[in-house]
Image (cartoon, rainbow, N blue to C red):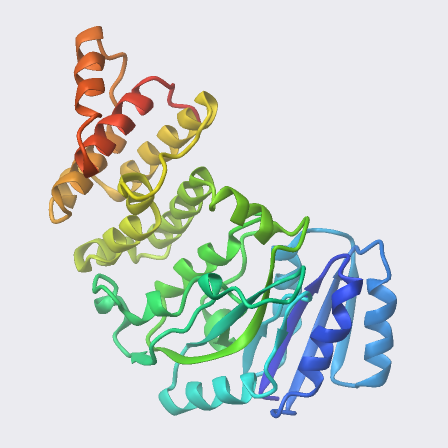
Length: 362
């Protein structure tokens, strides 16, 4: 069997028909569709069972609610295909999607292959170009050595799971699964974990996946409204870095620069970009962010090792590694004055004042 498609389902009765219709009509017919009913309380279970009776390639697994990450893992554990793909049940795909991805993966021997996607509004179906993804085509056969390069293939593939096709033996060989303690942004973590092992990545520019946005009550909508909460970003980066250390890739990643690239991509740009509003954090959240950042730098090593970063990125790293403790009145007044400077300098001192005023919570 060529492809196993895992579809985690929870109370998505209005969307199941369109999703499964797009999957059973794939031009690549050699596939199985594993629908994991994650404790739905609406008509979803009955609809899934009806589809399974109509098409023998559809398998339905009923279970108590455990979250999307856990449901995806159940599907991965039962998959039999050479490749594994993931589709969210409120989305749908172009009929050629999996044939195109399989063809590209086999051509290059890629561990992970990705395509672009089109985002559309749940309300009126309009295309949301600003949230869509049209990557430049590319193949990377020396993944770890290219991580530090701007515009590298790993960045062009985006972090979402559903635009990708994974080799099943690659996932199983390295025990790659979604982190079940995360109820959101688990895609980012799996992607960062996979990068520690991948030997070849490939991406095609075609937008073959249709990604539903602005669906009331969905996790993606909540994250979109909150602009991917910074504290969650820091927690996920810390989890992935701990994994890199556990599997023996952290030292190599630091030497080659891709750990710093991930740090900048996920955290530093969010903190120091003058074009973005300063993160709105409560005192408790600010303290937890401080704690997570200190924990990350203790894991990755001394901030002095990051001198290759730009001036203000490096200064921020030093501050995050050792946040100011109980600064005096004169220090706070000086930082407040400097916070009025334009650009990254002013941003840095505004952050320094904010982080110094909160505790270092966990």
